[in-house]
Image (cartoon, rainbow, N blue to C red; front, side, top):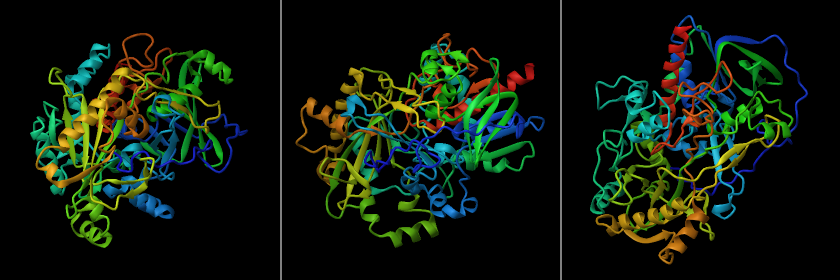
Length: 577
């Protein structure tokens, strides 16, 4: 969850390298001699790309190059932008990092028809670690049934039994000595009294307590597990990439925006990149692996000639393969913000933020307090109807609330003056589908993002159910004794039509886009079960874009799992050749 809500609205630059400049078509021509040659060229140093760089370079005989459009996430490497670098590392800094164009692609969607024609902010990480360096630090595997469902869709090798070992390789918990994975996972350092009351209220509302929603059963209310190590963010870059950057067979090239994938016939042989003021070629002897995420991976496929043929020809792009599904099947968790004003004297983040020196000292000397906070404290996974088998709603519980304007939207990242509580709810498996397409053939132009939120009738009905559940939880003791009033949507919003209108006016992305390069067993899918792009050779995709269906929860853990699984598949195929 982003406590900033959906109120931050950056300009939508067409030229992200220089937002003040208009988009323009470069006249630079790359040299025919590649500047870098490696066995594997990985495009994107995000959650999956960092994993791939680590695992593939573990073979000293394999030369690996990792391309990243953004810069290094470590402060000593970003001394000119120290504030940006520091915000990537202390946990509560995510609210600033997500709105910082130095480390994000500050995308805006197209006006969305079913959500009152609003543009939605979709930040994606543009730094080593990708979105794992700017997210809310919440670690959620999803339900095992998610992955068994992938297998039923023809994704052989992606059932829960197949992917659980990959999750095990990610995870390292103090509470479990058997965990020896790469990413440190921990429970909150502080258990806020309002959050404790929230867990108790959930139990009174019929939601069982859970000590581990990542265990055998997701359902329940408990504490979020977070990706932190000694009070600092533990991103995919921190966990997988930085420990191995001294390997002689791994080269990390930051500040290199990929323009397109290069083909000889139908075989991918490398990438064309913008590097400083030059256009260069990076060549792959074995494979190109696209790990640029659910927005940029389909964008790069389209720019490279893989996509709907008529659309590509209309933009003057030579067609390598007609692939109608590229950019389709886009999914995201649309989130609603139920907020409550707490009684005077009840502690909350709003109160703590008024004591910045105290909070700075708490963090400096104990790695506790407000600055050590992730995006939410309490994880709630519930079944909206007792007749269904699996949780279909998630709440993020946070003992704080945002200031809002007269239109009900958050005022930037400013906290409300009054102590507050926020229950941020989303439907876990939405039916609405969106799409990614090109604005032009110019790589520096932002892609067209159409999320189509709440376009499915079932999703509209679920929005009303989510608000009803938030109110039901808030009405339970001991939480009800701490609440003075409902501030958003407000007690005057009562009928289903009024609640749905509120949901359309005020909800937004929880920043979980997936599915735009769908994996499947059918010939229309973009990649097969071994993540190979259909109809071409030497090209795979390994990131959240390959998910045929969105997982039931936050998506960073599943993205790292995809990186782990992809590295297995690539190594297995290399051994056979």
